Amino acid sequence: MHFANGWLSFELGVLRRLTFSSVAFPFTGEPELALQLKRWKIRVATNDPMLWSYTKGIALIENHGERLSDEDLDTLLDEAYVPREKLDNPTLLKWFNEADAWWFDNVRFNAEHLEPFKRALALTAGMMVGDYVLSFNEQTRSLREPLSLSKTFRLMLDCLPAVHDNTLRNRSTNQDVREFVAERVHTDLMFLRLPVPVTQTSTARDPLISWREEWLRGADDFWVELERERGAKLGSRVQSKQQYLGFVEDLLRTASHIETWAIAHTENGFISNEELVEKISRVRKVEAVYTKDFSDLLGVRASLVVATS
Image (cartoon, rainbow, N blue to C red; front, top):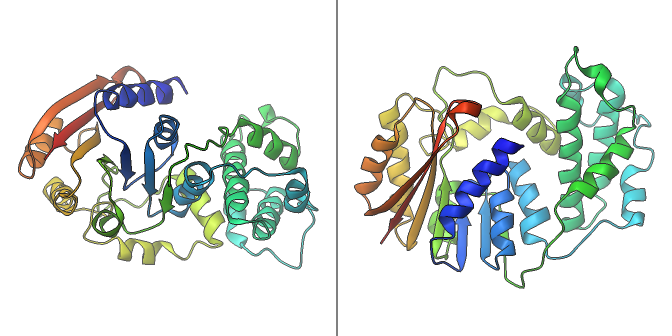
């Protein structure tokens, strides 16, 4: 948590130096930065190809005031542990024991009876419950609080950031990143958090991301098609750093109509900060490069490259 807060503070510190009233996030991931900018009365457009991130964006960015009532919670958690004829999503058994799998399956089913913003809030809290459960392994499982997941859900719901209305038309989308930038973005600033490069030989997926996506999509048979749709673009698998940097340049040229770019990069050995800056400079003048060393915590260095037209 200290690391996450330090990273957020670094990015906010850089953005305070810039003048903008609207911002677009092609790859949102976790929405903490977007949420803070929303509180600054900035118009925010979030996007992510992953459904879990889009759902959080609906709950916390596009939502201006909807909350879950006691009646909604009764609908959502009613008989959440009671098995139905069969699991709608049997892939949950990859991640959870049978009792917990039934809880997640039923909550996902019951959430469909809620209005869109409330549904997104419910699913966001549900993701927090799943992350909590999966944070334990066989050695630490005895440390898990002996609460039902329904009680844990209520606690997680209380931990969600308060829904904030900044009176602006904020939006969250689940689009191809290039299409989002080309067609939907009319903002002063693009905050591009570069995705972690994934090579052609990589097979493992981040379990924290995988379980969320499989819970929301109701299966695990979508990964091949999802990768096919993302092929030959930033965010897809790459064969080399030259290919990755080429995808970066392609997206930046697509975003040439946006006045200011803030490009966040985690230097982890695949591409250097210097290589990235050189690539950005081919498209637009780089105004400043800000860096912060987090190597004591995770062995990486964060950089934020600012370029303006």
